[in-house]
Length: 131
Length: 130
Image 1 (cartoon, chains in turn yellow, green):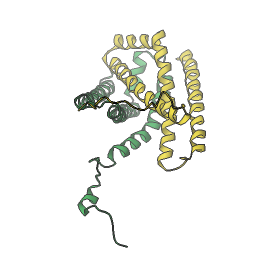
Image 2: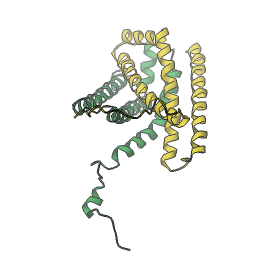
Image 3: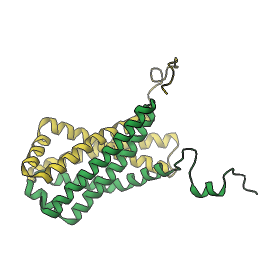
Image 4: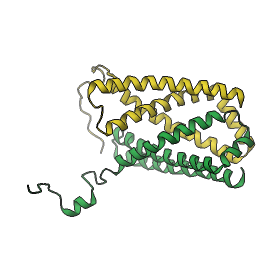
């Protein structure tokens, strides 16, 4: 049953964005983005199983500007979702739920995302040079 | 002190609550998350390490039993985690009952399909050399 259209009090329009809320919705957004990326993963595996031509085609796309752009976005989303996911798992044990700790761990998640993404891409450039 | 809970012994044994599924979804999501920490890190590192690999080298690597098993686990657990995650997103934002149900079913079936395709691809390479 579709809910009746009634006026709502403003929320997103008036509430000041906070680290906790922003990181939370970003966790959801990166999750959805990673789900889309998972389709790409399967396509890549199926291409490899299909034959050399399909595989080369997939590799060519991934090496193209669009492919690299998508991969870069995917790795940022991945490392963020991983770091914040661990933050969630720690919360599930009951630890770190007070506001100062949540802010500290939140900043740590942002830092980890940046560092891990850089490490991965520098690693990729080095490995790609040798591979 | 008497037991003041209002549940029957059978209710307590079944462990279900008002959501009719208990904490299964929550716990499964935690388990898949935990499993994905090592699995997905392995996956990212492995992919980076094989970026320049041509088809033959890639097939040889994926055909290795350990690689194949880890890749199968990564694919399976990822899509289980994805299906559960997308489920709560749909439940949160879609309120038209038929649309919500359709979307939930399509997403879950889609994840099964993708997982099956991915696992089959790995097995095909592992057993037939590509």
